[in-house]
Length: 122
Image (cartoon, rainbow, N blue to C red):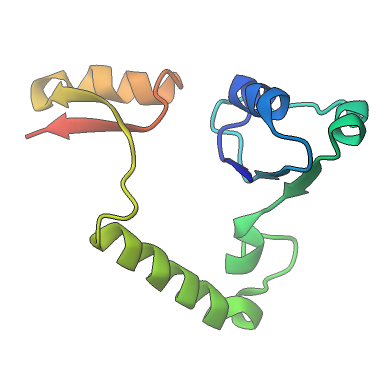
């Protein structure tokens, strides 16, 4: 299973290295580039590509489905928060910046040079 919120070059690399029969879950394009997938590669490697728009479940879709999915979304978020609090889920930190260098930290984030978290040290 490949979970990809980045897209772009990272998605391309994931597609190439995915084992035969793998599933690729595409949930975003933080890199700024929406990848294009050659259908023959899906066929030859027997891959499954799944697109997932979380916004649909919280009212950002073409129709507002918040009420319909409120209970499972709340349960999922609670599980994620519990995993983060217990240390089972820890985001990678790419770079630390002193607070005085906040502008460079913002630029690193906005220019998409960061994969993972950019931290300001206070």
